[in-house]
Length: 285
Picture (cartoon, rainbow, N blue to C red):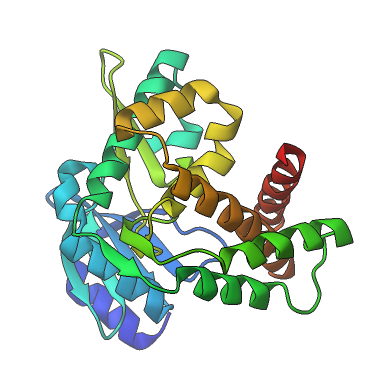
């Protein structure tokens, strides 16, 4: 952490006490839970990635206010040092929460509601060349060494990426783009009622409609049809035919790219997740 960042943190937080380090290994962000002398808890996030910082700051300024207490709210920021101070939310990560089946279904229903509110936080826009842009990005990830993909897996992924280039202009909307149980918090009261909130907006941006469903489908909903039903009930509808087509081709390309890039970065868990999603897509074909 540079002297500039340390100075910014001291200015933003004052005499706050570090309660916990919530940083995720292998990422560009340092995340800490702080407690002010009066007892108030806040989240400090310093990000060495300019793009990640800019995306999250934009989301905190323009989109998360619409979600209210179900998302972090901006307290202060130092744009030069890329440091954010935001409200802390109660609860534990949804993937670590001990919930009954009924509570899980309610949690994913609420998640669908929150995602719909985020998607409607600003007017729709249009990305004229989404398919070509995404295809170019994914091909770049699969150029050079592609361990641990087999030849068949790589060919399958590249065929899907070819299909992306056939997509017409796409409607785009405010999107989280990393909506998984790791970025959802579950707070359970004494009556067993669960309240869900969503965190970590550093990947958020305007993106083609449908792509924001991908992560939660691949990591949870595909294996739990009951949670998928609850999620789409909360969202208010199922994905459209166009969204399903985009999700399939993007999902295959994303899974292959994550498999390769995470393996190269030594992030074995992420690589295995991507590889499992790719193999599941191949089986479903």
